[in-house]
Image (cartoon, rainbow, N blue to C red; front, side, top):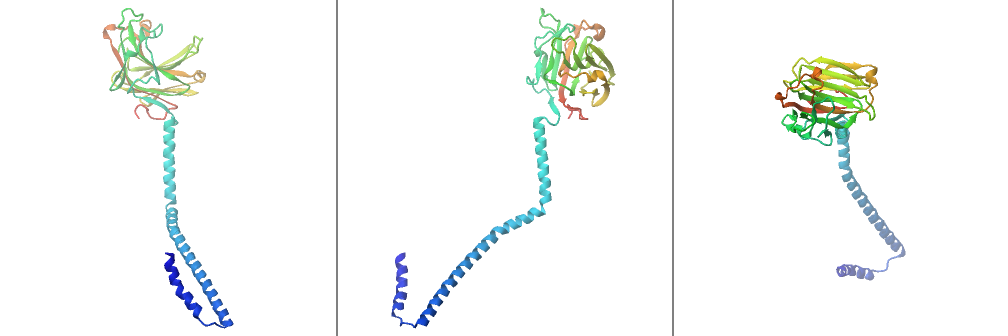
Length: 327
């Protein structure tokens, strides 16, 4: 490639050697002209470069200007979308962290050992005529069936056997709810309650919702503190053994409120409530009692088994004005 370029340039060099000698002024003029031509070429080159750069910059800036214009026009809309997306992310984080106030809603698709202690082989105290066994808890399409039946072991210390749920977690205040259908029958008690008894002490603290099988149209609410109890019967206005209903209570530092089907039916206030300050576990139980027959009636084993049907248990930081189990 170098050789052709040299061949093209050779005639110009030869022609220049044969030209007559010019005068000094002519030489200066020629030199100036060549210099001017060189400068002109440089100016043209720089101008071309400047134009190219300007064109390229304009080409690059044009989309940016267009995008900027669109961005300005849609800034408010984009900000609104961003705020909405951030709100959704916050809600998701709150849901994942439980920050919406709902601790759990258990519909008993399985028996959750991480949430509940399932009493198995326990005595259930001196006043109960049943022991507690895990196999008395059965999963059904409705949720959970807690079965009280004649004890299958003839040599068992208790004549009946039933089940119980006890939360692994303890709670200091909160909202507690269950949806259930209770059994009918003399000698039976369904209890949904929180309870604690400090080690080494005979007194205990407890908040109770109880329905006796002998009268399933009444709910008894009870508050136990320092060995003293305060019990109040509530007329339900329906038979709790006919269908599922929601029963709940909210425990706050200054009040205990009881709800049936999302309706406030009773409230406790005063120093006895304010002095209840120990964390408690949540329980659901179905038990029988021969000793407490004056209260619960005489149990008839020929009517066994009895079934407490539970579709849901839920717990939240506070009452939110709606049923958690029905949400």
